[in-house]
Amino acid sequence: MNFWETVLCASLASLLAIILGGLHSMGAFRKRRPKEPPLDKGFIPWLGHGITFKKSPLTFLEGMQKKHGDIFTCLVGGNYLHFVLDPFIYEALLKESEEKLDFSKSASMIAFNLFGVQPTQDQHKVAHMNMKHLRGKTLEILNQRLMEKLQHIMLDGKHLRDGERSWQQDGIFHFSYRIIFQATFLTLFGDETGRAALNKEADKESQPMSYGEMFEKFLKFDHLAPQMVIGMLDPQRKEETDHLRNIFWDILSVQKISLNENISDWISEQDRQLAEIGMDETMRTKVMFLFFWVSQVNTGPAIFWILTYLLKHPEAMEAVRDEVDRALKGTGEEVKPGSPFIKATLATIKTPLLDSAILETLRLRASPFMFRTVVQDTDIRMADGREYLVRKGDALLLFPFLAIHMDPEIHPDPHAFKFDRFVSPNGTRKEFYKDGKTLKHSILPFGAGHTKCPGRFLAVNEMKIFVFLMLIYFDIELVNPEEGIPSVEGSSYGFGTVKPSHDIQFKYRLRF
Ligand code: HEM
Image (cartoon, rainbow, N blue to C red; front, side, top):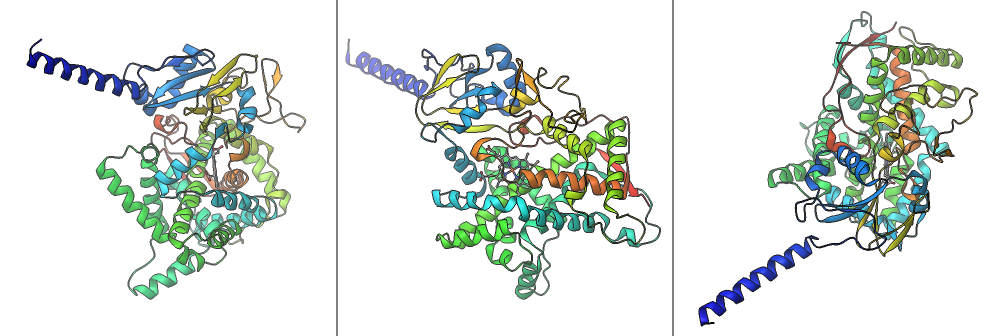
């Protein structure tokens, strides 16, 4: 072999080594080991099933479930994800020790990519301690504030003015999300006296941003959230999200929020304790934004869906409206021109049909993934005794939406909205079954285990109070009754309450 041939051979060998090394690090050579779940890498190195998964996680997973059953491993954008769709083992997996299945890694990645927050152990402890402010007596105070704020915003003085019975028109999504957005802000973060005062001081001309404008900016940020979570923003969108983040850091700066009146204990205690453990103002403001986002992002769409379902199912609307009217009568209060706001507490408003319609809406439209990072090789025992091993460094994903909410054995005719699905004839808790066994959870819209959504009680109450008030104060109708229920934006599956592909117009007018 002459000199040049030797150089050429050496170069080709290096190139081959680089390609093979690259493919190896892309996971192209990963083989299924004994006891591991079925492995599906797709055809594209590294990316695997990334494109189809990103487009619609639900459609992708339905296909994989048909092909592989209730446990399988897929390559998605360089990560090996183990999907488990056996609901009977969810409880055990979510209780598994953090030395084996860790929640904090994925949560920290999301918190950092979206909000620039790098959670510490101490911060987790503080957050955990403050969950108690979203239940019990403090929750009752939040409910009452919400009841008052919602009436204030919904009615906007209309009930006091003559001739306000004309029809008005809006998109259901825009109408309901905008109103609950403002009411939730005021309930949790307080009345904005502080922000208004500071703005005045800084610049006599400038006005605080209106809630409507804030809401539009929030929607823009939220729209880009799934891409932010996986760190896949192009430079232009990155600039846009940086800009939006700065706006919210300004609105929610701890300095401004601390000047507000009636801040909820959940927010004020959280911030006081974070300051106590030495977290600086900049980071506490970022935490404020994180809490603001989680408290808003799922509830608005959930209220949109329940109103839309009720409007599209006249028998459900009639039954719920009847029930709500009777419940109002039971409280001894009434709505009529010029009457004061309703003050009834949720404890006195008994609405089993509406409660069931709320659960049914969450069953159909809340679809969270539950993530765990596999910290060490871990055994998984399925309900029927099959045993699998998941590999250290991979991720484990539970998807109750597919495993429970959409299982026809648990919920017959799973795509249909049956508003009374969760009502038990004798008023007891209704049981749901699979393989002849009772399920502990018939739906899991809020996650489970120690990472379960701490705002779940408030969220359900927000939905209940909103629908209750809409129905006692307004006649509501679809502008075009023939129009179908909007489909779901495919990419929003897996991230809490799904988003509609488009809005749907309705009209409303005072009932009295
Ligand atoms: C329909 C409305 C809601 C849905 C479907 C929902 C769902 C969820 C889900 C699935 C999680 C993650 C659970 C897990 O990983 O196991 C979560 C976390 C959380 N949610 Fe909710 N949620 C809703 C409303 C709310 C509200 C109103 C609040 C606050 C008042 C709230 C506060 C939180 C907080 C603080 C976390 C934990 C975030 C973290 O530290 O990682 N949520 N929620």
